[in-house]
Image (cartoon, rainbow, N blue to C red):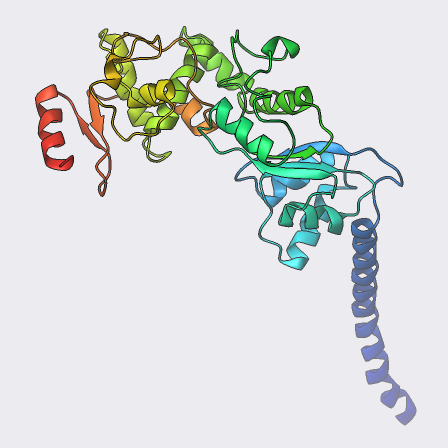
Length: 339
């Protein structure tokens, strides 16, 4: 009887340990499986794919994008690796990624913005003109100075609206180009990015408003150059649309700068008299084409302007943009802020 009593607590401990050990075994096996998925590429051999990571895209969205592009074994494994490594700096941009890469390699590329030795990473800021983009591409050795300026748009056919030049069609973003890329390939990649960002939902809204995409991009290009911040873009868009509605000239200094190639804060009286279809002081309505390559915030502002009664605005040097409803109010603000 005594030996039986002594064995009972021992058996109880065994019965308690068995499920714990089973759980530990499952956890270990699951952990090894997840690590295996993380460290094993989707394919042994695979061609590079171009993937564009949008600004503000979270880990979950990026993981889903990689899975949809068939670059990783599953979104969960990418998210798990990012979580385990506490990686917080995945960068927006355009990358060349192969399904033969393992998740740590892909994460390293996206978190460091790394490019291959045969590639060039280049950022085109919002509001850059074709001339400025030409200069930046030439600085990296991708093209010769003037090549982009002289490029014939008819050499590519993926535009979403009728164009006479590339102005307004080259979407500002961070790109990775192969050093041997042709000018046509570079242009096409930037236009394809434009087509990706200006999606069907935006196009449907533009059509619903009875406007054309060319009108929207032209307006967006002015908004881009006039606004101090993205937050005020819809309000500035509202001012310009209010002027168009009553047949009042836009009187945008940005359009004067486009003519002169200058970057003046305010156009001079002489400059406002320049004979040019882009002079919105002399000519009512929109200029004949965009004056720069606007970003998505400016494009959305042109589509979704903020309604108001404002007809004027000015930019003080050390204060937020000041809006006015009447010329008298505007002149008073000019006397106050533009001393």
